[in-house]
Amino acid sequence: MSALLTTAVDPAAAERAAAMTMPSPELEVWRYSRIAELDLAAFPPGEARTTVIGAEVLPAADPALVARLVAGMAVHDIFDELNAAYHQTVAICVPAGKVLAEPIVVTHRIPLEDSGRAVYPRLVIHGGQDSEFTVVERFESHLDAQALIVPRLVLHAEQAARVSYLGINLLGDKVWQLGHQQATGERDSTTLLATVALGGDYARVRTDARLVGQGGTTKQVALYYADGNQMHDFRTLQDHIAPRTSSDLLFKGAVQDTAKSVYTGLIRIGEDARGSTAYQTNRNLTLSEGAWAESVPNLDIKTNEVKCSHASTVGPIDDEQRFYLESRGIPPEVAERLVVLGFFDDVLGLLPVGDLRTDLRARVAAKLQRRLPEVHA
Image (cartoon, rainbow, N blue to C red):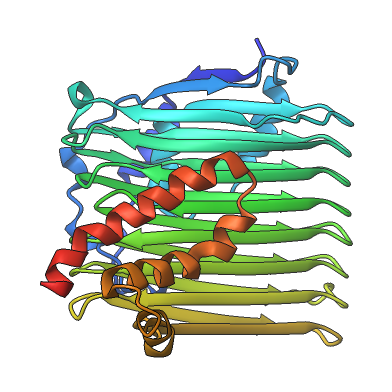
């Protein structure tokens, strides 16, 4: 057995969750969210249909190691406890020095017959010293399935490990997603946390990237596109604990129709993180008058000798870019498609699995195409 797959019910965690209250948009970390709309009682626990491809070459994951990594994940709210109570765990542990040329793909599917359930997948990834590999996690559902999916990611990269993760949200527009990711990088490690969010009704991902070893590096990238009444919600933390660490974040999104997006990011440089560098960039396109995007970057610096910057923009397509293309005979709808796809190109280029870029680019183009008749009628 190369990947540890377990399903369990933890009565103690279920009891703790039952004693907790639902979060409110009045809390800063849930500000601008739609959490007040969720009727949690309407979604009894269920199970996703989970498959793992590409882990056959690995030895069996050590249950003690997996338990230790899970125990180190911070608990912030009732959804963390619910995941602990009803988790379906996939654990992938790559030994020291192991290099995998092909990605490991974990897919969670919610079929129509499981509509009306809450599912709680947990993915644990451990990279041994000087290992190198990529894990892709896909979230999919039947178009008519109503569900709540509450995924958790625990990623740990040991010294000099190079670990890449890509999460792809292709859920139907009747599914809510409330995700939490925690990545920890040891000395001289490199982690990449990438997200593509195209599906869901309300889809939220909170990502905490921690650098606990000197010389560690982490990068976060995301592409998100919301249409109809969708909402994408991202909360990120670039947490520098050790000295001479570096982090970089690039999130790009587009919203159209009456869709919404929220990005809130924090760069935190601890007292012992001298010599660190951190960058944070969030760009948003609003493609319809009824669409709305919010971007809130933040800095918390507790030491000197650091380099930090953050930038954010929210606005429509650049008129000069569109005019340039149209002046050369390109029809308006084609010009707009080229500008939007070009906007996402640098993020697509950073994704760790090149074979997926063509498919994801086509999915973005399909979303854009759905609004063109309204714009150019």
